[in-house]
Length: 250
Ligand code: NAP
Image 1: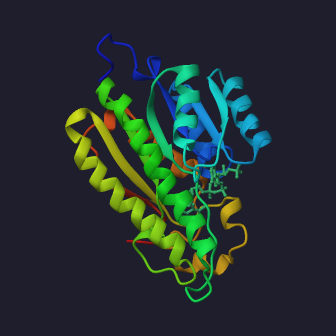
Image 2: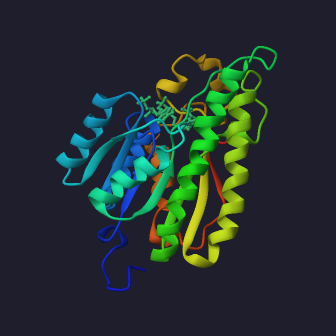
């Protein structure tokens, strides 16, 4: 179903991908741009990487802009969404992808490591969601996709802060989805398993022995799922968490 005037939704709005400068976020930004969305590519410190993603999208005939900001900071949601709105119009697709891990056994995780992970992965995603909802409700169309993790529902020793943040994202996803389901706004999550990005470069490949598919996923495989959840066709999918994990959680 297209917008009332028959044009695709992407003609009247934009997408924002937090942490779109690298890894899964970069693949998501490119996938959404290929669907016709002008895309805000957010980054915290990697200005060159974000510019590279924007260049790649533009070379393919799409529209994109880089937007800088630390999602853990109060006020970041307003700045990031405001910048994209000013350039491209209302943000109708929000992908909360920015994330960090700071691993350690629970006895070793200090308050700083707890707060940085929760502030980035969970509170940042909540504030962006809260700020994005009103324009989506006004447009009677919106798609929020949160990048959770298989670790949100499955024990992962050494990741209490990360697991708590991702479990929180999954809980938030279902509840916000129920709040806005009548408004044409869907809220879903993807829960990747092990995906080959900078974030997982330090992990031993022994982990792959427990993955039924016996390989890591690619950012593009996660992006394909996000692209579907962000599509008009996914209108009746909301509150769901889609595992993208090679069978790890099966
Ligand atoms: P990545 O390669 O490390 O990229 C992380 C991205 O997030 C970068 O663009 C980074 O920007 C941005 N970012 C980090 N902290 C930020 C902050 N405070 N404010 C704004 N941007 C910030 O990670 P990835 O593997 O693609 O992970 C993307 C998401 O998938 C994360 O939420 C992660 O938890 C989740 N995930 C990943 C895996 C996996 O196996 N890779 C599995 C499950 C879930 P800068 O470079 O500018 O810092």
